[in-house]
Length: 347
Image (cartoon, rainbow, N blue to C red; front, side, top):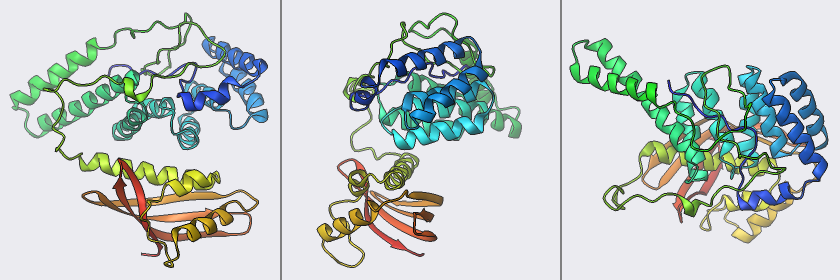
């Protein structure tokens, strides 16, 4: 398979997310550069030790956590790296790079459908993120190769499948060309055949911002799909899944604004109270002292046009309460976003 790019060594962030990075003291930027240098030199144990010390003082720092994910990937600890990158997607959903790096690991494990989903989320976050687009193309090629190979196992005389499989083989054998943007010298390649994403030509103290979504390349009218063509059900299911993940993540980090924004204006309150009363009660509960952890398990989604029904097991833990219960959310498409219309316990 053609190689995938693993973003290294710096995060690209949106204008909204870059502010807190720009405010970091120079000593922190120097520490991150030292860690990046150790990674380039293959000194992974030392880099891990240094990044752990750095994160002890700044546990929520996105750049440090991202570097730790790369170190764990290089040290062949994929499960730990997946945990790091997954949490980054929850805490900083506007960053596409953690999604891309999750896809890299999933591709190494031959979990191509998971890799596809992660790359699709990266592209939804930043439509102009070229690395994810290219990697997604490689994933599609791998999935197609598997399908053609399966067809030949069933019917070895299928000349059409043979030709298509050969074409994909040629494509994958020639597409491992250098990335358009140059990399810093000495940048390591992962042990497995994965792509390393282009890093900035110069290693800045803070990462540069990605181009806004509006900068994405537009298709010609002939190539663009008709506006009336509905989105594939699989894409809608992925969007609903992500909406629920973001809702649970906002609740867990006690981000009341983001949590309430997950509910539609026409949300049907459980007891028939006004939306203002319900919002006030939810804010009062969420802002109580103590940490909150909300987990979603066994998520099942059924689609009906622009309405979705999600059933799952919800795990809730706070300073005073720990519960697990079945939950049902009904979501609807509102101005391009999947928002909660109704929720109930049980079912």
